[in-house]
Length: 126
Image 1 (cartoon, rainbow, N blue to C red):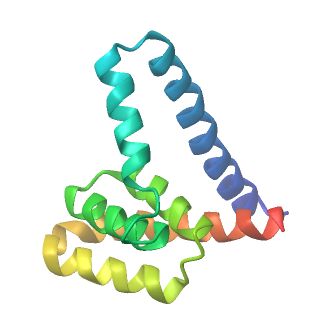
Image 2 (image 1 turned 90 degrees about the vertical axis):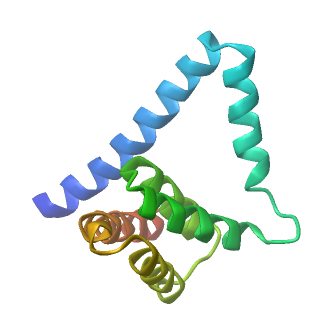
């Protein structure tokens, strides 16, 4: 494995580990309001009239417009797990660019880098 590949998989793993560890700490110490918000967030992305993949693509677009890199990474990972194709993801990126404008471009770059990490990780998991 090249250093670039090692760094990419470590970055993906670091993101997942950090998120899980801190969510556990937050939920262990958080208030009822915090816990309810986390539950509401989880429930919102469950299948309903819209399927999970569509909801995650919507979340990804909103996160890009709001310029939240952690949220972008999370939704890309969820989109990949829900079976989104690269074509679907790139059309979602296009929507975010149109809505958010050129200020979204730096986040698009990081989104594509994280998508590559997700696809690489997905290949290792299969």
